[in-house]
Structures are given as C-alpha cells and as structure tokens.
Image (tube, rainbow, N blue to C red; front, side, top):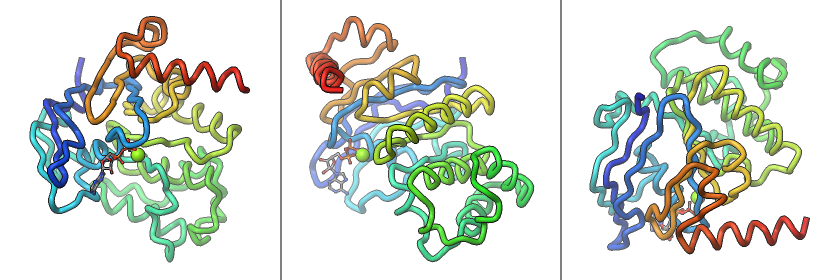
Length: 248
Ligand SMILES: Nc1ncnc2c1ncn2[C@@H]1O[C@H](COP(=O)(O)OP(=O)(O)O)[C@@H](O)[C@H]1O
Ligand SMILES: [Mg+2]
C-alpha cells in the first residue's frame, strides 16, 4: 500500500534539547492514523517539522521525511496540509472569510475558485453570505470548519490535524468527529490525527502511535493499544482515562 507520508529516524534538536528523538512512522493512503501524547511530548514540533513552518532558527533536523515516497520538498509539501489547533491565530485578523480562503487557492496549483469555495461552504454549513465577514467574528466551531475548507481547497493527499477538537464544546466536538470521518471516507483524504485525548483518537483511527518525551514508545492497532498496552506510559494514559470516565 502507498505511504502518503513517512518519517524515517527523524530527530529534532532545539538549543541542545532533543525535542523529537529518532521517530519513524508511516501514514498509509486512505487511513486515519493517530498519535497520542501528553502536553510537551513534541506533537506540535513534529507537525511543524513535517510542514517546515514556524520553526526556530537554531533548529537541527536529522533523518528523512518522505511525501508520496519521495524526499519532502517545497513542491510536494503542498500535498500535506495542516488543520490548526487554534485556527483563530493562524488567519490574518484583518481579513474577511473570502480573503482567508483565497489565500489557500493561491497556494495550490489548480484554481477552481469561486464555485469550489461555494460548494465547500455549503457542505460545511457556513452560509455564503458570510464571505465578506471579518474572520474574527466566527465562532470556534465555525473557524474549525473554515480551517478544514482552507485545507481541502489545496487538494491535499493528507491532512495533519493537531488537537483539532480541543477548545470546542462537546456537541461541536461530536460534529467535528463526524466531519473528519466523512472527509476520509468521501474525499479519500488520508489523515494524521494528533491529540492528548485517547477516546477521541480511538474513535477515529485504526492505528495509533504513542509519543512520550519526543519518542514513539508504542505503536499498534487501536484494539491492541486499548486491550494490551505494553508501555508504562500508555497504561498511565488509559488509567487516567478510566478515572475521568468515572467522573462523568
Ligand atoms: N521554538 C522552541 N524553542 C524552544 N523549545 C521549544 C520550541 N518549540 C517547542 N519547544 C519545546 O519542545 C517540547 C515539545 O513541545 P510541543 O511540540 O509544543 O509539544 P506538544 O505539542 O506535544 O504539547 C516542549 O518542551 C517545548 O518547550
Ligand atoms: Mg501541541
């Protein structure tokens, strides 16, 4: 099966700290692959390294990133699009919705423009009449859907989603989960889903990597991870999840 994204022995060093340590993983075409890890484990740094954005100057990167089985370049990185943890801070606050989405079209090679934007707005329940509204006036759930529309406009092969539902209220989280699985099924987009929330990851993914202190400490099918976790950190994650389930 084709790999849309592959990391081979990736190490990221920032100011003498190994933030990512020798990570290898594959994102298979058509799949939703998960990564779970606590705060500070290196998830966002990993995403930024794959995308080659928002990295400090003093960074040292070792190992390889492959996109569709070729070494990552500025050119083939367009197949890999992010859906941001905090879309509100990504978009230019002076822009209206139309400008935010057109920026995505400029990034991509094909220019389907207006019609494609309108179809997607409709699909994601954002009324067309809001195209001229300032981006700051949209709610968290709307911004998250707008962030998805922006990514889809770039015709991606794979979406990198860094904590896509944190900060959204539970009902909107449920909608987002439905949207993510529909995107994967209907548009055949592969997804790399990253979160600290094991229930969210387990509900959507078939295969999970567990990251701890910048290293992959365990990788397995969802069922195995839930039934037979092998690493102490994974056991701890599952234990804290059972505790919070009891509280609910
Ligand atoms: N630009 C940076 N300069 C120095 N340290 C950084 C930088 N970016 C991330 N880190 C450090 O890398 C570690 C991992 O952070 P991050 O990738 O944001 O983790 P996560 O997304 O899993 O919470 C943290 O200890 C963080 O302080
Ligand atoms: Mg993060």
